[in-house]
Length: 399
Image 1 (cartoon, one colour):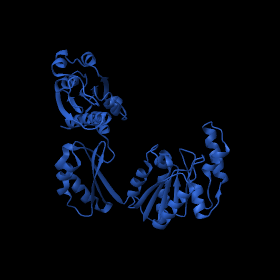
Image 2 (tube, one colour):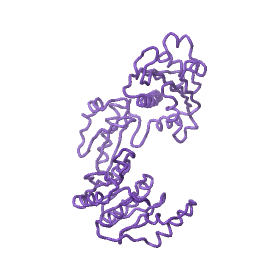
Image 3 (spheres, one colour):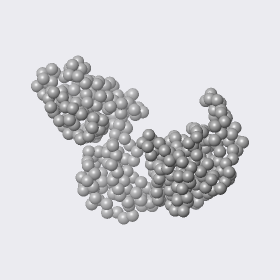
Image 4 (tube, one colour):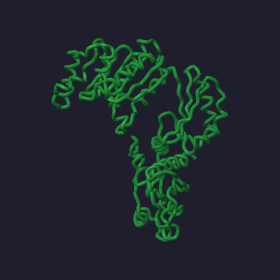
C-alpha cells in the first residue's frame, strides 16, 4: 500500500513553524510496512490544496492530511476536500453537542465560528479528539487531522488501527531495533560495523541525531532472531560507544544507572551554564539521585562553591584540565560532572580557541578528564559539551 502525506499551512513554508507531524506519521506507518511515496507542504489556499489532493489521489492508495481543521478563516482543508469530492459539508447533532460540552468544561464561550471545527463532507467518518476540539475525519481514502501535534498523536493510532482492519493489513509485523551510539562519527561507525551486516533480509541504516548516531536494523518479525544476532555482534565490537537502545536518551540511561547503583550525582558547570542539570532533572526519578548543581561561571564562583584553588586558576586558567579536575573534586556526591570551556563566539583573555572544552567526571575516587575541541556556534558547543559530559559519566559508571 502506498501513502502520501500533505501538510497544510503557510506557516511551514515561511519558516514560522517546523513540521514534526510527518515524522511521527512516518514512524508509525513504518511498523505497518507501508510505503510513503511523497510528502508535500501546501499553503492555506484552497486551489493549491485541491491540486495537491488531486495529485495524491492519482498516485497513492491513502492520503493523510494534517492542518487546517480549526475555526479560523485560513482553516480550509475540509472545505477543499469537500469541493474536490463534490460533496457538501454537514454538521452532526451529536458532534455539535460534544463540542459545546468541551467549551463549557474549559469555561470558554461557544461562538458560531467554532462550528467549523466539526464540519465534514457528507459520508465522512469522525475520530474522537480527546485532547482538543476538532475531530479527525476520513472519507474516500482521505484522512485529515488537526495540525496540533498532541491532537494528531491522540487520533492517529485510533485511525490506523481502524484502517488496518478495514484494509486487512496487520499491525506490528515489522521489527525495528535501534542501537544508540555516541562518540563516533558516522563514517567511522560505518567502517567499524559494516562487516557485521552478514544476515539476510535485514535493512541497515545510520541516522545522525543531536544525541548521537543510531544504527537501525529493520526486518520482519519472523526474522527477529537474525536481527538479534547482528545486534550482539555490534555490542561486541563497539560496546563502549553504545549507551542504549530504541527510545533511550543519554540522561535517561544515566539516571537509571544511578538508581540501580544507588549513587548520587552533582554537577559543576561553567560553559554549559546549567544545561546538564536541566537534562538530568528532566527525567522521572532524578530526585532520588540528583543532589545539587552549581553554575560557576566566574573564577570567584569556582573558588567559592567548588573549592578550586586560586593558584590553579592563575597558573593554568579557568579552561584547563587542572581546573576541571578540581571542579569535579569539589562536588560532594558519589558521582559528578564538571565542564569548563570557551563556547564563543569570542575567546577569553588567554586566546584559547573557541570550542575548547574540558569535561571531568568522577565515580567515587575515580576521576576521568577529557579535552574536546568542538565546532559550531555557541549553542552547539554548549549542547555538545552537555551530551559528552553525560556520556562520559555513563562510560565511567559502566566500567
